[in-house]
Length: 129
Image (cartoon, rainbow, N blue to C red):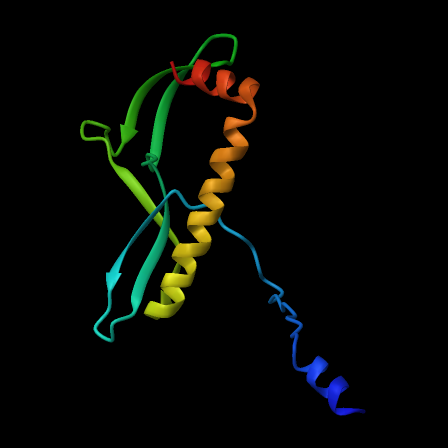
């Protein structure tokens, strides 16, 4: 191998991604976290949803269909919100800054994509109000 070929080999790098067998992307609509004692960014991603009762009792109509709600445990006098924490991520400041730059870029791409599809925007507006 010549010196030029050696320099060419050092001018690029190939990344290979390895996924564990149980790799499974999860949906998240929120994050909670802060700065840890070592100065790292700590994030816990969650999915927020209404709380579900442990048990409900309903009447049965004469034709066998489920009827009105008779009892619910716990009662829903004070509705609860569940935040199911699916995963956590801890990163140093440099990695967090790179993530911020990458995420900003993806947000801009997503905005441009939705703005370039007027049919989808109209459907979204109609669904919201």
